Length: 178
Image 1 (tube, helix red, strand yellow):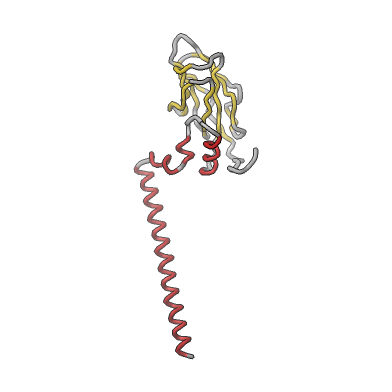
Image 2: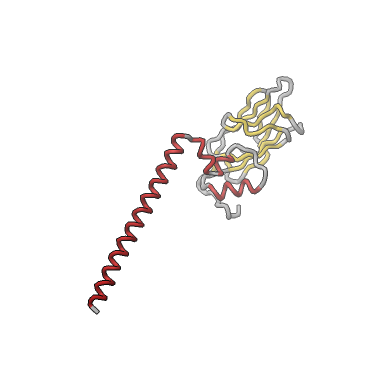
C-alpha cells in the first residue's frame, strides 16, 4: 500500500512537471508569434489591412450593409459612415471624392458612401474648369458630429469639408441598436 502511494505521488509530480512545461512552452510560443506579428507590421505597414477588415475598408465606398457590419464586428475603433451627394447632376466622372488625399471614389452616380474615422479629411476634386459642382453631406451615421448633414462645398479644384469628428465616448457595438 505504501508503494502504491509513493507511485501515485511520483506520477503526480511527473504529470505536474509535464503540465508546467507545456504551459511554459505555450506561453513562449504565443509570445514569439506576437513579436513576429508586430515586427511584420513595423517592417511593412501594408500588412495591417490584410489582417483587419476595418482597415481594409477605410475610405472605400460601401457596396452593401454587409460591409458595415463586418467592420463593426472586427474593429472596436469608432468607425463611422458618411454619404456625399452631387447636386444638380446625375453623374460627373471627373469629380472625385478624396479621403485624406487619397481617391475614395468618383461620382459615376450622384452619391458616394464611405467609411471614415476620427480626424479624416474629406475633399472633392473637380478637374472640370467649365463646370463648378456642389456636393453636400446627404447622410451620416449617428456617431459623426461633423460635418453636419447638408454641409456643402461649391466650386472648382479641390474643395474641403470640415474634418471628420466622431463621438468616441459611446460607440455602438455590432449588435446594438441606435
